[in-house]
Length: 247
Image (tube, rainbow, N blue to C red):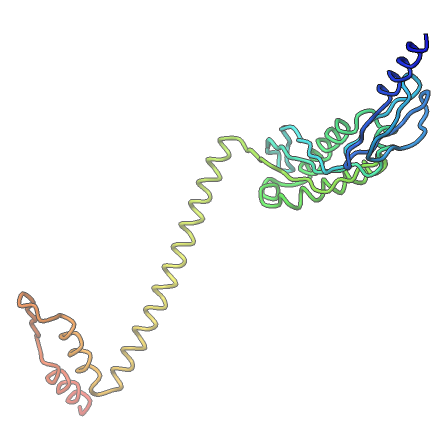
């Protein structure tokens, strides 16, 4: 008789033992009412009359499923993301919302549609960080009453229609060609200015033209196949120039 009693007591003790890890807390309900929290270590929960729900306190991630959103300029884009959050009040996360993971994922989807719907496509493509921050503020404000802390929301992929991709590619190519032409024209303009300054300098110096001619001849090299034909010597050109000034 006593053996059965002892066995039953041991069995009740065994099934009452719970071990909570360092990053966990337990929310205990006794006869359906919240009666306290359990921290890490060996804990006892009386069967039948008590129930304990484990809550992970580490930073967790939830995917924002890919969804189609219409931007402010009526362009459909497919967007997905990820939410980084942690539970800071386990009792609120268990008692105030049925499934806090599902709830935060759904709220993040709604906030994402609202934020992107108020932006143009160019802003959406260039301001990912800004969009993520705006969504985080909205979601964190609402989920604070659920005992959750939303730390970061990141957009992962932003997909635009294929025909729009082709248009954007042509536009980018045209923009690159435009910049190349502008750079080339600016280079030609600077080269023309430098040539004009060089010509003016050589015109003011009597021996500058002869020196430039000698440099050109020296640059041709000693190769026997190079043949240089000078129509008029430089001195003859200088004579005509001086004679014209005297007249």
